[in-house]
Length: 325
Ligand SMILES: Cc1ncc(COP(=O)(O)O)c(C=O)c1O
Image 1: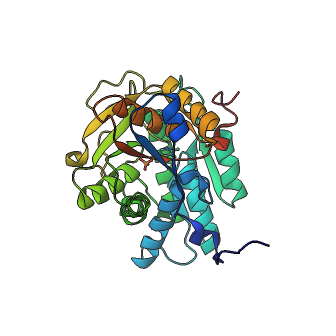
Image 2 (image 1 turned 60 degrees about the vertical axis):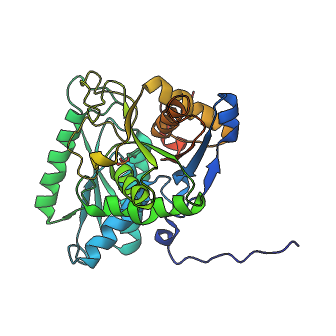
């Protein structure tokens, strides 16, 4: 028998959230002939297979600490699936009933997984003309209305990821400090595809505090780059989890945005596939978008630099889509 390293015993899956590994994508960088480094933080290795487990934990623990969430109270949230999965895990472990309100446009794996974790899942029809797999800002408004109705009906606590500071704090207090520790503070660039803006906002704030010279790039879909001030021409893009065409994201401080990048559906898919083939990292559309953003800047203004991206969720969540054929 070899030497056994000391390993931890955890007392619940909630304690396992975070402290995800970081991997240098040297094979992908070589394949693309890029001058620079891409370091990927594997958020899909969280218990719910996405970075959003972190905010599920933070929002619930902040609410408990602030007296906003009482024992036995129902928790409700609007979700594209990942935040709901994180909340289902945290609520399940802590004993709260959780209701996830989700658009029918999101992949079926997500609803099934939340149900498996004990959540009640309410699916909301898309707008006429919207396509499954393409959730628009309009579709999301319908989900929001239904979430508000259920909160009122049940006297529930709304774990509102678009407004509760716990979303920002999860990344400011944990994700970013982990990245600074894993890179020994030696990162130059951070690229992040934005949904609620929690991970971009929380990480950018911590990075700028540590070293204002770290450049933070905000990634949006081509045709839905409203934060970049561009016209909305393609609200029904395919990069699930973000690009909601909302220009009022409270966690994003424009002074901390060093540049706005746009990524097409095809690029997001191409890089998600390349990531799987070259690096053995099986991730979803938005992780492909983050890599596409990193490649853009490393081939341009940030040549030779060290770029960090989050690998947001698992490719397993998209097996029913044509990302994997
Ligand atoms: C797969 C995926 N990617 C990206 C995002 C965007 O992250 P944030 O809400 O922190 O901007 C989300 C958010 O739900 C997501 O589920």
